[in-house]
Image 1 (cartoon, rainbow, N blue to C red):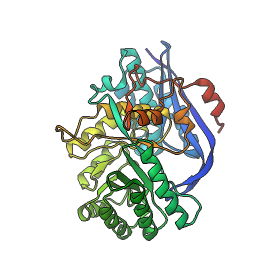
Image 2: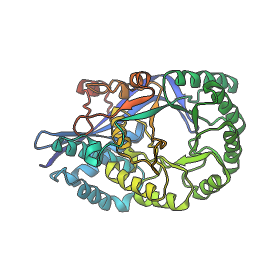
Image 3: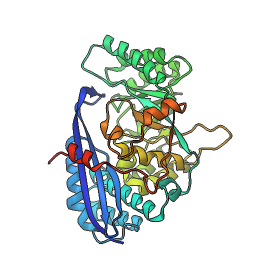
Image 4: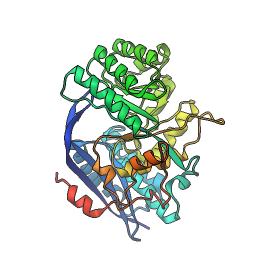
Length: 389
């Protein structure tokens, strides 16, 4: 079997309303899918993390840089392909966009391998520790409105997400430390005292401001405090973890096993959040997962993207062993963006229908059982939403 073609599909549409987080506002949603074709008619699908013009740049890396390196290679030689590409690109970027581009190709190769073997991805990895995965609802984005309007909206949206059946919820911050504490108080009010909520700062705080917000989260009983400071600030993460009782989480902006080794040896995270569509794909994710568990650090995958990313993560979460184990371990959760996302909800020939599953199954989502990723994009949908460079 040989790789005959690698093609990127960059998709985009205008959101019904502008959304924001601590770094920017955005009015369009983008997805970057990778299609790997073979001479035996088997096609694999992957996804690259990266919005907007980043997706367009990554498309160039996929099609003009990576594809010429691996055309003609056996797609089942996943690890050989991974290291070939990484070693040839090492001088030009061990992190960032080259790894995002490689991630999409690698995921597609795993999809092909599963189809060849006639096995779902989770069984190819080693089997399912769970046949369904609990999901948390992520929402409460920033908008161009007053602090008071944010507070009212966050309280109501948090209550609505709980009512949808999710097992927990996650909010954004970014209005400034003092205003953000009020947002967190509103979310706790909205969900009640017996429901987990998490806070995602997208690295907007200095360490002192992160301590200010983190102490409030301790009192509110938040489950985790995500990316409180810049991902490069390893000292800040270590200080926050040592000085706060709320769980410190992060890692979505880290790449490959060598970057993750530095984070884990620094002991700055209570919960690791690797992004499989960015860090190097499934091949590298499995190495990172092993590193995290070797450091006794639980993993809750970062998930942001289309139905391809969601399906990939459902398999990975199913195959993740409990840490440290026991009769009633805390399970890894699927991150689910509750804002408008037709690339997740309408992309596939057979949609995953995550929200419907959550409502019907006490917050849980079934793991796909078809070979490989077990999902297939609708080509008419791809064509309708494709954008040019």
